[in-house]
Amino acid sequence: MGRSLSVDNAGVRLHALDNERDGALVPVLAVPGMGEEADEYAWLLDALGDRRVVVVDVRGRGRSDAPEHGYTWEDHYRDVLAVMASTGLDRPVLMGYSR
View 1 (cartoon, helix red, strand yellow):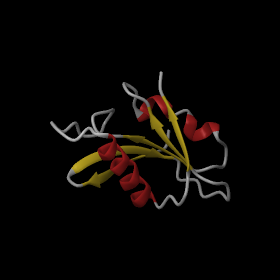
View 2 (tube, helix red, strand yellow):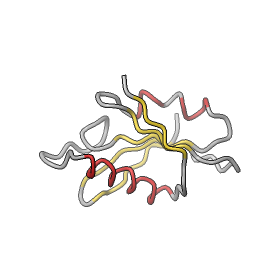
View 3 (cartoon, helix red, strand yellow):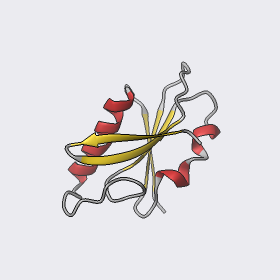
View 4 (cartoon, one colour):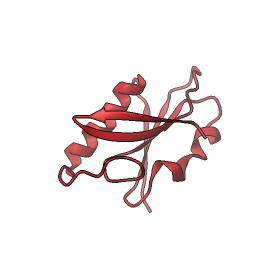
């Protein structure tokens, strides 16, 4: 399992997993679907070989904060951008999956 990290987005603490690989391949940012969390995608951190992989729990999921308000698409988009900025991801492949 990768390193667990915490990212702040305007007072909302977001959780993410990061395999911290520094390969030449384009990194992947994975966003689990509704009802899923980053820990369910921990297998992906090793499955993509030398590629850097970050899996994010957007607000209200997994180990991220669950504020009373702030669940629009824009809020989730800003969560993803905050994780990208914090981890230094530049133009990653964005992977989303929903059951």
